[in-house]
Length: 563
Ligand SMILES: Nc1ncnc2c1ncn2[C@@H]1O[C@H](COP(=O)(O)OP(=O)(O)OP(=O)(O)O)[C@@H](O)[C@H]1O
Ligand SMILES: [Mg+2]
Image 1 (cartoon, rainbow, N blue to C red):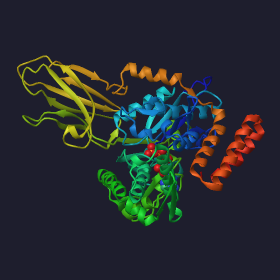
Image 2: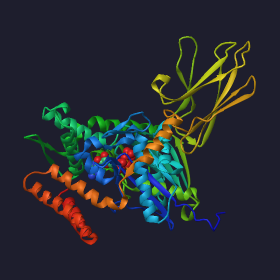
Image 3: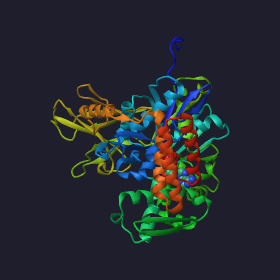
Image 4: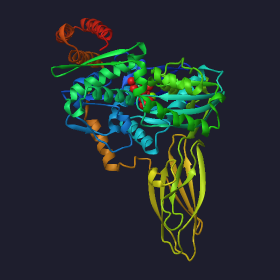
């Protein structure tokens, strides 16, 4: 029973995307998207360091990706789990610190919308995210002052939102191609039960790669190498190609790009794009085949096919899916917002709120987890699975192992994740040493793996000889980070100045105007210069009504020119 005197925490769901992030709240029996300071539901996952050393997040930062590439970072979710440091001017940030800044901005939007502080949320992650990537996501939330009530797999979140809207689906394949990651999930609706049968994917395949392929192709056609191009021109070209990619569905596209005094031209139509993207399109097939095989289904056994993620707007992707499945995919819910809505639905489900009280979700562990073993002389480094991929979670499995020789004093338990027979080809998670009481014969030990609904693992070892148990909660903190570096991240972020939320609409328009000026020429550039100077003067006058009306006109004008 909930104490009636205590306000219930807001039921929030966050989609922390490679390209765009969103936050939704469950209110009055439904999930609702929360708008940011600009009135948009999508906040670009981009962070920039302004000239006065303040942090900008979202659309303003997205515009500065072109004008100030050396002070701006995008797509850092791709590096989550690595030790990469990303430079913004003279400062360097880890991927989880940058993610924390995006989460902090979403948190502020939710607080402005709800009118009270918020402290917890369900956050979605790619189904195929590893243990370390999940832990780093939890750490990013901690840095942003959010406790995570659950990590939910992105396609599973989408499935939950669909589950509320559609009663007729049974066996469904969710195809989620975002900016940076690709996930395939096969599930079955037997409402109120939603049962995930198999999940697989590729953490390094998304819309960004399709843009990168276009960039390579046009540079090759122009016989240019990246080394010949300054950072700003390169960022401007990447931006232009991103826009060209998104317009390809409307018909053949033309690109004009200037480098110094020279103008370069490039044309692209849908058929040529499919050829250029052939290697990437090919990589979409294997996870689909594996998910179906693991779920023991054939394409014809599926009742429906759901597309999620902005990159599924590409005709080439839709065609590939139609060919593979011999039918048109189903996509009437917005592929951009469905994951956030599903995450908020999960928050409600967890809190056992109203309409979703009955919905029961079972998910799977998308990869195999096991330990390193020695299978005799010369056969070292073999991978011995304990939890096989696509086992329903939460799960707890135990396997028996033996010491290698009598009087062995110590044994190392090294935990790995992956689908390859040798540990060297899999992802190392953690290792620890156990001291044995030596005896004259070989000893047996039971290794138990428990994998929870957030996708986090615990290891438990029992030595049969002594009955001693060694419980080893795989450290919840990211393995690459010790306590000092975690505290350092907290201190560094606390010391940062973040651009005030209410000043963002004006700051964003200025950033957009600067980018438009940079990307245009001739009379169009003159017009944009007039707008930029005019708006700067209006800002100096400090008349709020005049500023708001000018801002709205100029934003519309820039939208029209597609800047
Ligand atoms: N009309 C369009 N045509 C082609 N691609 C598009 C279109 N609209 C958006 N995209 C692509 O969709 C991608 C962004 O999708 P989305 O917002 O779903 O990703 P994300 O959730 O941020 O990423 P991820 O889920 O991988 O972390 C970008 O690569 C973008 O280029
Ligand atoms: Mg996404």
